Length: 486
Image (cartoon, one colour):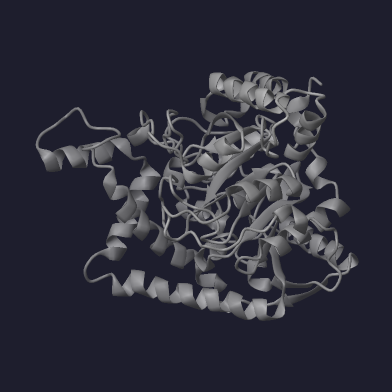
């Protein structure tokens, strides 16, 4: 039982239900794993061992009474550090929020508390979720468990690294332009971005409000469905969360794709996609064909404008959202006060990192008088064209399959001086956020010992078909069973 930390949610649940292990033992195993491995990986900004043990003991007491319990009761979970947690530091990996302790929980955190989950800590990320490598954290760089010299991806790099290194049983991340799926691909785990509006954003510290979505980072597809059951649904505090019935996503876990129509958009295999990544994803498509799916190449012509469109819209929304960090009510305040305007300027200058400043400046410029029509309005029009591309594709296909990241994990520091190369890391994931679609990333092979990620994109509100395809592929392969040696 010494390697309880390696369990999935469903494996741990079965042991807990049979009384073969207690939540306290499971949580203790995860905390000991963190103690042993965290100094190498550095996935967490804040650890909460006392809270975790307290919640684990409460879960054990509840089970002992014979009460009905949830699948997540007693399961150790990690939370990305842009999800508000009552009484626990929530920093967004930024100096400007380094001492911020929220007085309330995010909606998804409430949901997990109600289900008896155990919170082991808050994971590292790119500052305010702006980045693709977790190198933009104000505190330290998280390392990829498969190769400690490489990045884990971003911005949910801490969550993906924690799941891959067994520093938790499962985790939550957020995805604005690929921030769950890209690190999941680079760390060899499963990550899902639900349809925009499927999960409440209440208590998620905003980056770009029309693009952000919270989702699971898990060890396999079954766990992804379990976590989706817990976090989806309407919340009156988020006007963009949609009042739709939440299906039991685990009922979609059927290994059957006969007759399913798969589109393979050629544009996602251009733009700097490494040949070994493209070949591996094509092999995954052939595997699905051998299982009965019908695949064919297709074209989404406006996808090539996705990156340019995103890097106008997201910074514009960030410019507006991050205006609240002014040193007045909470967060960092400069010590060099010389009047209100000077205080605001100095606070923001000292508190924000270089990447965040760059995106705020781009966004402010795009929204400024004389440039709004040329940039922001144009980008919104292109967004509509991209969405229409997907709409047309989904008239023919049930899902689309693409690479998740154009390359495997790159070396820490390799792209630090090349902002364009860094932003190209999200070229395959960004169009999904622009169109508000659901998509899942999962491992489908390796190159030079580093995981390659497959991306499955679905119709709006059709996470079930994505999960069915992912589960079918997972059951036919063993990529998800491979573990980094730490």
